Length: 251
Length: 264
Image (tube, rainbow over all chains, first blue to last red; front, side):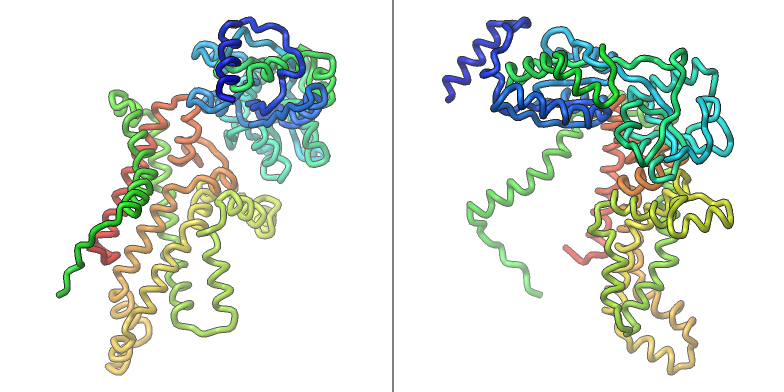
């Protein structure tokens, strides 16, 4: 067992940063995927598809705000794959030599205004977020969605005063769903995942920044073959279909 | 006077006890070792740090005052009045001690939120909303910290020799005079210990606060919330703030142990 492990290790280091294409049998075993909170539902579905394509593999997921995941990786958390909701956080991982090879964009997302089910406050666009009778909340400044939201608001020339800076997009959605807040800016996919409990108001394309999601294999991966296979799967027709089923758009 | 006997520690017991102690001391050592001492002053004097510190102090002291105002009468009732369902009521009002704070936050939202049982009436009747306000922070902190005061004060009242109060009564003192001049001074140590314990718990409150009151600098972002969010953007600053909270907690424990909890 130990010898096998050493052999595997030698094989990986011999391959350097460009491992050979993976055959399905080597991609088996446990696979730890760290993914941005907004990928929760889509990656669970993609995990099922990956398992079917690679029998014997067992992907598990750690979903959290991208900055949280980055902190965990920096502190040496055991992960095989890192999926970030934005470029700057992935760049930090690259700079810290946490990931192997170049990160790849595997999906894009758009922003939407999340409002209570049925839109009780009759919000029709970004300008309404600054209305005095609208309780607007957003994400903490380091959360990728907050940066995209700031771009969208700047493009629309609106300066709403948020009442709370939630730790991630799911926090915004749940407070709107509970009726404690009237509106927030989250991804299209978050509104879709909470359908029935909240409604969405579209943001025009001219004001809507495209959020690119990047994925990379973790350099210290326990299962490098599985990591490579998972990244390949995300970019394959099957993986793309799973992601688009949840509202993500192709890279 | 009997002195505690010096006992030889069995090797296995000593080793396990050492492991147990190391489990708590190592994380503290890690924090001390990794804290950027050079930047400590800059981190501590940053406006957002001072704002979080100010808010934490104001909110936790207010929560302690509310706990004293409502908790002492509650403790008095539990200690002195026999009524059916007393044990059940006591269990319900001390539940936050064992409840995950996030659950407490959700429960507060469902009671005092805009769609909550009472919150709905407050908003419709008076235009008052509690979530996302400093008042909401005080409520969340009071919710999780008051039980510590209630239990400590109740224990103090139960161990009180009631003959002092009876003597005062036979000498013609009224109920309020007895309470103010005899009962409360006699249980002062319990009152103090309970107040400090609940204050320390309020100061460290995180889960119920972020769930019920959200997070906004200067309004609802207390020290623990700032520590959590800074860990993502400026980890060094978050280490320093953690140390501040650690020092306060340690001071409280050491102070209480020596003065009121009767240990050597």
